[in-house]
Amino acid sequence: MTDPVRPPGTRRTGPTEDERLFLSPLAAPDHRFEGVTDTWRVLRIMGEFVEGFDTLAHVQHGVTLFGSARVTDQDASYWAAVETARRLAQAGFTVITGGGPGIMEAGNRGAREAGSETIGLNIELPFEQGTNAYVDKAIHFRYFFVRKTMFVKYSIGFVVFPGGFGTMDELFESLTLIQTGKIHNFPVVLFDSGYWKGLVEWLTNTMAAERKIQPDDLKLFTVTDDPDEAVAQLVAARRRLMAERPDQTASSGGRAAIV
Image (cartoon, rainbow, N blue to C red):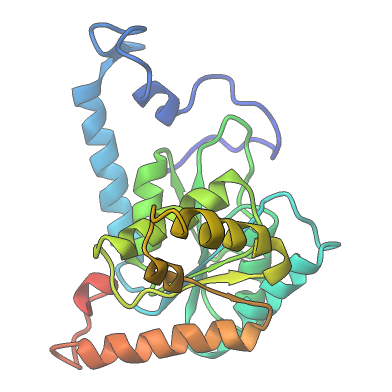
């Protein structure tokens, strides 16, 4: 999707497409916003899915790195993401990020330094974040849920670095998809045990202890401070997925062809 280029950090002049889509029926009883109906908007959504599927169809060994857009290269997590992405690329993975600054930039940077193609799936936000300089192939999405579909479909696992609400959203959506059997053999690696310690303790001592989840659900993710351990989790998952392929010579892109 092509959008006007605005300097990062500048405010958009109008609402985002997600904002228009989620406008309450109380505010727009006839389901129109700026003359466009929700039914017509479905065609725009369909177009984003088509572009995403078409652009990423060649990706078979994708791994997505998530994390805060707010960190700089003065933050230790930035360099941990660079190193993890570099080692993932060296292991033959295609590194995918949200395409913006912070951990996303670090992930694309590490993969670029290893000589691998880097992918950034950017999103329309109220404040423009721009695409970082280390992205080779960028797609600009207007709808969060379309973008999130691409992360899952074209990755065989996630590595999640310290981040905020957006990072938590991706983390818990992936865990829900695994828990409910929507995706399989999909490792979720939380990087930086110090950052995740409080969350893991709450999941263990409150959520699991009160049986809001099963104790085995705590095994749906792992925590590490070691890039090599993170890469090993993805390599093992790839090996399992390849072993399940009905046709080892299949060339179709994406996880759907090999799950």
